Image (cartoon, rainbow, N blue to C red):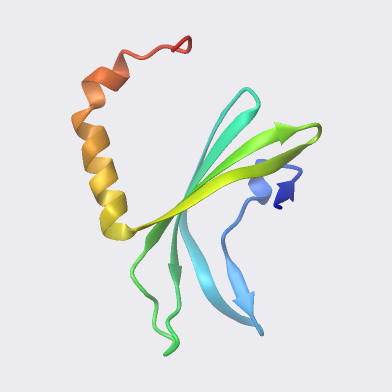
Length: 102
């Protein structure tokens, strides 16, 4: 279970034996009420040491007392993340009409 005190502590970088094997390229946080979503574009090293194509991690967190608890997470390949972005773009007009009450 992942618990963090602040959303800035949600990271995706990873080192193994002093070598960086996963690095964050981009990060964005959305927070509303007791819920937050963190989107992280990242790369991982292959066994040969080259960086693999970027992927997207979406992490959903819930505020519990004075901490954030990981509720769910999904990782998408880069092409799937781009397909999602394209789908959201076609839904832009419908989504733009949404209100906080929805």
